[in-house]
Length: 337
Image (cartoon, rainbow, N blue to C red):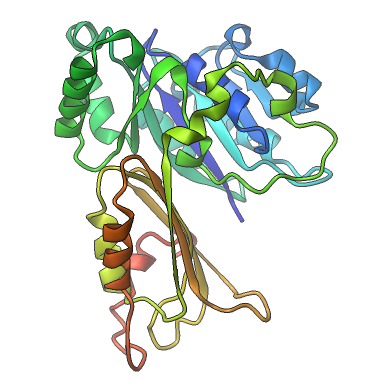
């Protein structure tokens, strides 16, 4: 399974480092590789104690998007994801410089030649306190929001609720597909960005180093809902792709395994979405498995009954489909195709 590389961008002061620190605090059982511009503000001591010093890479010249085409980006990702003893990284987070251009950074990740890594989405942090002032200073903010896979509205605890709602509406007007996630005090559930595996047996978990029982960030997962769906019958690929394209804005992530009702497509499709980004990976079904579709939808304010009803509408009854074009929507988002 490939390792997602998530780009975390935002202008100076938007709260990117705070978000990254909260991810490190709350993702106790996730092995994160991090690329940061300045270790000083990040909990690097916790990384060192947890035994992951070789999974934190500093950018001496500050900006990843400004590096030359000399393979340096590939070198960074190769160092982070190099084979090592025990399980590898679950995800890599690249915290961009406050002057970095997100589109250039995304292109560098998309064009990497490092095997076993994939683009995991662009997350743009937007300061709720300085939103209008930032737009005046940096008109390109609107473009950054428009290209984001997830928009983080930071510092919402410092503005009135109605103002936070207004700013969220502005962001949705700029980007109708990406979820706009409030991130008060930088709190963000890692499940919204990448897979969080079951707890593993290992020497020391990062969360055991920095865990603070009184820190509300350690319970950030309680801010979100999870809806599970299972179907023994296969899904119609066209209907399912249409569901993904029109899913409610409150659905931040969809993940799981899918079986499609198309003749000759007997493979298992691993689905991972981050905001507007949709990615399938093909693979074989494990011997003896039920070959059932199993999905988890993560978000806020979810209507579980409506989501399950829409997913049931994607179930195909009858003989397998023989239309060779039925899978085109899936294949466009399938890794390696």
